Length: 276
Image 1 (cartoon, rainbow, N blue to C red):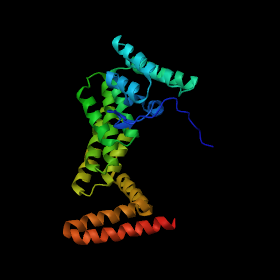
Image 2 (cartoon, one colour):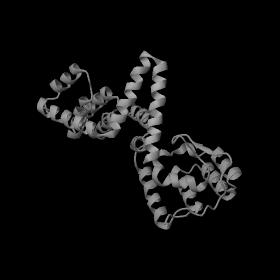
Image 3 (cartoon, rainbow, N blue to C red):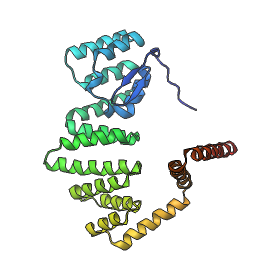
Image 4 (tube, rainbow, N blue to C red):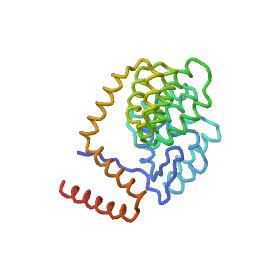
């Protein structure tokens, strides 16, 4: 049986836009649901009079808005601001409030660099790859030569490689994984670079990769490529992707014919869905 949540405040006619998360919220409960798993995507930018005014006018949460305005006037931190929302919302259980309180305390004791890294990681989890890449690049610009920053930078380059790979930008993915390996010497970065290189069609780029990374022998690389090819042949998604790729190639030759073929393909997908 699904869980039901009793809303204590009305829903807003006009939503509040969470800039960092690129998301509209319409109620206190929706904000709390977001906070529960995405707390690193929020920061001091939410601590504004505009947000308090929205709570008061749209959600009729006059008491909570007054408390939050007072926290802003007293220049209290982000943790105190969030905890006030968490306590007054009536959304969380006691254990959930304690857990979020611990998370906020951890954020207070971490450096801004570490907190921004966690925020970028959450963009990755949400598959917001362009936002993650932008945040990662800004982090790399602010990195120092300390051993901890070098280690974190290696992780950042690895995650950037993963973001590019998931967007099928395998050339950039290989470069990022190689930079990650140069900094942190993680074997999984080297393996990920090799796997991304398997998708490259440029033979010279692949040969350059093999020559510069003696940890991976040509026969190992060929085994990786063979495994990926076999998985691709077994994957229905790969077959559907190939149909789309053919339509894209056809469009370069004849847009009229491509539209006709596209219409036919869409009807095929509709028919198959209706049968399932």
